[in-house]
Image (tube, rainbow, N blue to C red):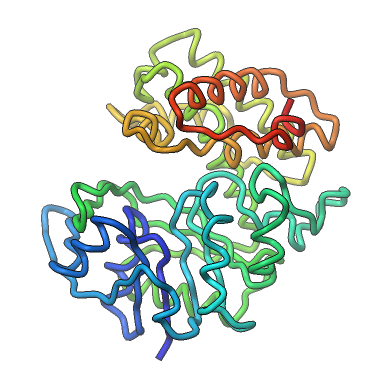
Length: 338
């Protein structure tokens, strides 16, 4: 039986768990604190389309209690992955596949990327400080993932699905591997939409387009997407940020198959929604800044692409988050993204 572990059974991790619980797999969750205690005592409560189900699942806060896994979904924030990789060593072997469900550029991004630049098969400091994830997990074990659903933790042990069922998957080298097909089939059997993409990096950047622009603008103003859309000055800033993001992406071979205006219109059509960065700020949680903005600037600096607006918004957001105790500054990352 396929062994699957979800490290970080929060909103998205919990949704994946609820779906995989419907399939014939050996499923384990790794969670901590009140959320773990609630799942342990009462099961995971999952709410979707007005229907509530309670799932009795194996949950632990100690990976050493689990067997070697076939697949591990890492569903913690991107900036937290390097803090947990050592604890994964007991449940990983050479056949284990790692799927990170994160915003921003993933830690494995330049593995077999064939960009024709000197960034190929190197790590980004802003995503993976000192290359700890790259060196510990090894990029050849990664399967790429772009997450589209919106879910939230209502209270410990209770997860509500708001919208979206799509998780795009792809191998870093673009091949259609057996391991990719196997996990995609399992997720589909659980009720998800899981396209297997030959070039997942294009999709990563289309999502990053919105993350690097709307997220910081919203976090700095505490405005919803539609409110930003109704503010001429803010939406012009979003457009300039997206233009710079596109320049960087195109420099490493990304094809943007939608226009900036279409991408903007898709975002601002969502009513009363604040991006995850703003939600984290309002909840007093550490912010994902380096993976979604710093990573673009790091690439731009290494490839001599001018991104003044991204640099300015990055500095403003880091200062605000630092003053609130929600961001820990790194001298190396500051140097690479100034």
